[in-house]
Image 1 (cartoon, one colour):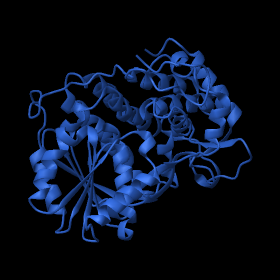
Image 2 (image 1 turned 45 degrees about the vertical axis):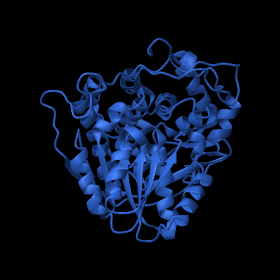
Image 3 (image 1 turned 90 degrees about the horizontal axis):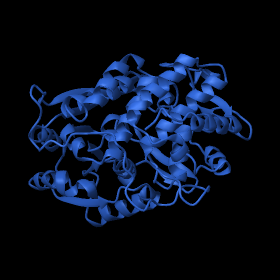
Image 4 (image 1 turned 90 degrees about the vertical axis):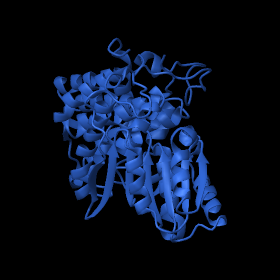
Length: 420
């Protein structure tokens, strides 16, 4: 089932009485078992931010070799091991045990819910580290999804004005998107990702087998970000994307490596030129203006992936209304988003209050790039898949009246029947 409105209109849907389930399939292979012909090698790619590279080691069922690379990177100092409670026993404990043979390890368990993504948690984590003797020679290791990566990343940036950071992503959103960035941020009462810093990790390492054990909604989140990359950055990867989504339940190793490749291919060249994502790499904000607002208003009931998917459809409708995107480009959005198996828009979006949405849009973290008036919202828009509308200063941003965004949302709502 999808998100179902309860209690009428308001600032967000009430907490669900049961789990929110998306029907995006994914196989659950036993550890150490993959399909015939699947690649089990450990691969290494170099992700360059400006002129500084970060090694990214990845593979499928490659945990032992992967951990060797982590041990090589960890120096003699202590390790602050920040871990999502959901992966502590299944994936993290063997890593912690192995690290403890070499250095002191201080695990810090995080409940990875959106309400926890605040400066107060970063402060608690930092106090915990210092109380246990964590020093400048230490390493912060983040094992979990995007939320854990941001909390740990911001703590690493602040502790002693910067200590070594290693990412071990265990969700698609983290492995394919969140760790492929210098951005480390938390939420404020006014909105998402409004406080943060830029900080570069020393190493990223991911056993894609970890990703096969997550809830379907988290799989949706990672796949939605790859849909964004296909629509906004690498439209030539559309065939690979569609095939990968279709293979998630039958050939998970091939599917996940293909999705990883889409994320890396999209981000690598842009981050090399724009490491702080303040110019051309703002394209990765596609769908996030409305998406972040919906996610924040829902209090985490609507997952990041679903919210960004709706945000991309709204952005496409805005682009069409302004005469930038033709009918074929709009249809491409619905076709690429279709495999995500979203709930029907009349069901998923009925709770959205226009006044509350406008208030959240007014605090979007892209405000200030362009000079606009009250009600003007900076958005990434497309002329065609892979081609952004260029605004003042060459930025891929366009000021859009918030009333037009609400009208575009109504168009998405009215277009029922294409989603599950």
